[in-house]
Amino acid sequence: MAQRATSRKSPLVFAVARLDGMKQCRVLICSFFLASITVWAAPPAQPVPKRPKLVLGIVIDQFRYDYLTRFRKDYTGGFVRLLENGAVFTNAHQAHVPTVTAVGHSTFLTGATPALSGIVANDWYDRETGKTVTSVSDDTTELLGAPGKGSSPRRLLVSTLGDELKISGKGGKVIGISIKDRSAILPSGHMADGAYWFDAGTGDFVSSTYYFAQLPEWAAEFNKSRRADAYSGVSWKSIIPPAIVFRTMGTAQNAKFYGSLESSPYGNELIEQFAERAIAAEGLGRHDGIDLLTVSFSANDYVGHALGPDSPEVRDMSVRTDRLLGKLFAYLDARLGPGNVLMVLTADHGVAPIPEVNEKRKMPGGRINARSIVKAAEDALDQKYGAGHWILSTSEAGMYLNHQLIAEKKLQLEDVQETAARAIRRIPHIFRVYTAEQLFQGEVQADTVGTRTERGYNAGRSGDLIVIQDPYWLIGGNSGTSHSTPFDYDSHVPLVFCGAGVKPGRYYATAAVNDVAPTLATMLDVEIPSGSVGRVLSEILGH
Ligand SMILES: [Zn+2]
Image (cartoon, rainbow, N blue to C red; front, side, top):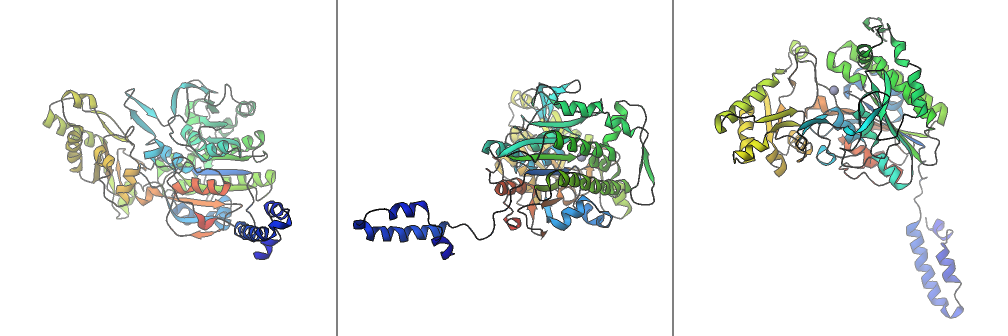
């Protein structure tokens, strides 16, 4: 260390040494002092990790952590590469409520909680306009590639990794791709060069005027090739023998057919094809700056909702995702050479077992009628304060009370909230009901459920009442399953980093998806996104 320091005299040491003889003594002291500074400032012995040319952020929509372990023997592609060469977190969670698509995707590369990001659900009631909005709906934009209003990241209140790459001057291009608009837009961020998603009306990939005035030539060309139509009449068979036919796709090339692709392996295949096209056409990984591509595979979510985590179709979708990731990684290897891509993979949420499947195996669970919750609140409020239109809306972001009516009747908002909450708490299999007042004041239990609910609450956007059901219970729906709770089956997701600068191995400590953004920002030496509450996963750095 000392030897290295003296042989690396700084220019300042030479400048001081040029002074005349009368000052020799002082020069010596100065030189000695500067030499010690040089020792202190010497770079660490380990080599500086190679900067990636491309960061590939992958989200699988609805992918429980246990899909990695339960189906491990069936994997031969991308998952094997990640599991064998990556830093694998075995206990990573989406650490907020509700565990839904928009929230998981906004957390991924911002590190922010919904409380900070403002993305509190897929849809919520906007008190200003009196309308339900989606996390990305934006009437000031137009859809490009199909008729309709566009979408944008304007409701996201914080920066993403891509934004920070751009602001730092170290970023190249930032692109987001998915079937769902929110899943393409929220991970890529405000300053993205483009976000693209699938339009079930036309079978094309579309974007919005937020990004550009017209679709880039390559995207329009891709659409002209009518890749979606190639799945007309195709039978979806199990990839693992025996080759059972799960479903045969329709032949009419209409909205019903294109919509059905979203809930089949072919939706994911289209995403992967479009991603390859984007990589080539946009020259991703070949710019001076670091490029960022986010790809979210949505088809797993549609299949999972309909058929549940124990179905052979979900297993098949997982195995096909493994093969598809393998294809994408091989494509990147061939174009950019191995070692130039830094990959991180996670999921936006898990999913609950289908209640009827759980019942058969003597496990708890069931379905709560959603209407019964609204009715309990309405009845209690009518009875106590007189008949009125008390509830304006309900969504994953909570139940929204009529503030105008409450003000007209000169009632205290927190009293009305508590009256409704007490009525809902009496319904069987309702675990907890938090009022906005409780969440705003931080008056929640310091357990996982309390803290995750508090992190999900944004005063300007969330509802007045947040309802949490017992584990394994679903609110609403007569078939299939869902997610959104703070419980492990919804929160526990894969988290794998793989590539330059990552120490491979299995990491057992608890991690949050919020940790991804600060970790990547640290690796790329850019500012940590503005709303990040995550931890730098320093244990994986420095390979
Ligand atoms: Zn879902």
